[in-house]
Image 1 (tube, rainbow, N blue to C red):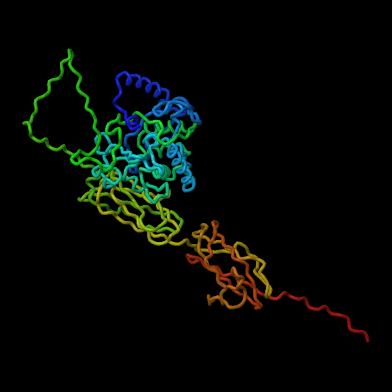
Image 2: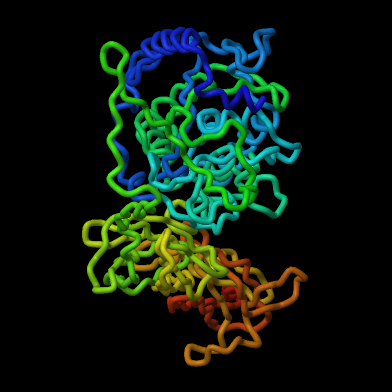
Length: 579
């Protein structure tokens, strides 16, 4: 199976020629930019600002499998077509555990982020392109791949340059990062995007349940709605910032939407072709930590083409060496990346960060990357992480966001969204791929508040001694003229206007056991800012009494209650008795 999955450059000339013709025909029929209905797709879409402002991509723009889906629409039911490696209806088969992981991720995202509208077929399309559905479903019962799936090391040699961020924990390489697992996350992205999809207490990029759920959350960030073509394009481009990749994923998404079926684990079809033509990828992925001592770090090995011979079969005469034999070659010169030049982070004028629970913060965090001499550094990835026990998040529900610095060296974090937990919140800015001290920002979440209270009706609140008030007290809370929802309130039947202690006579409420209470705590306004108090009762004391309602934020309202005996009409005059 591994050999079948890994075959790249071992085909004969005849087979290669036939394959080239077939692929050319298939590519022509599925030309980028036009789908089955003739409409323009996202082939010509420019990578969105969100995509370019993130880590670059979930995968570090690693190589991917370029096989196109078959021309024939998939058959929803299993067929007796060829086995793995064949074409036709078998291409629609997805290994059982892998398919289950995609569908569970869709269900979880439907609950957590219903506005995202994530289809499981999108996860299947990305899983197909990234790893051939976990190498045809080579997974254990818990969803963990039988062997780690590793992309080539991202050392800048034909690939992106991403220096080690995980100490080799995931990819076995302490010098450079590699994409890991069936959804091909790079370690620096997995550090914040990782999820526990199979509830085993771990976030493992090699587990299809964890990886599929993480991919779903990654695609649903930034409040993207994947039922909108523009947001769908942006989400896919953020996974791998390539128009060709976008086109290919859209092809598989459309294909899987037309029908698919479950096949046993380990029997899925396997892709043949990669975007890097097989450079840097081994037929059988290596296990982290198994590199032999003294061996070079695994990486891309690109064959250098030989120069064509001269007419008549002669070849170019090699030039004599310019240095004596045995002289060691000087190490190749390396140009430092912008990240290499960063010495520290500075606050870039962040204003005071305060918001009421449930509200968005009006100000955003700005951080500047600088050299030791204080010069701004552009194109550096700055990661903002919300730390500590808080439910405050960035817009979109994530606790981590990575943004590239602009030409002024400044990275502006997404807006913060306050949760319900009040108190201090810490947001830490760090440089991705560089060990420099982080920069902490303090934000404060205050409790929900109201600055005004008003009754919703003006009916007099009266009652006879020992009776029940006919009308319940209802008030509306506002803050700066807007509805103040979820605001804590207290209602007390006070002694007098100058004495806010609870009265010991007059009107009262009843608790759950029917006992008399004259102070109610733990009240909250509803989504419309309304608060309706329980029924009021009166004892035998007559007179005018006061009910005071107060809220967080200082809003206060005092309401008059009257307890009076029912008026009785005077007796009518009667005729004098006759003499």
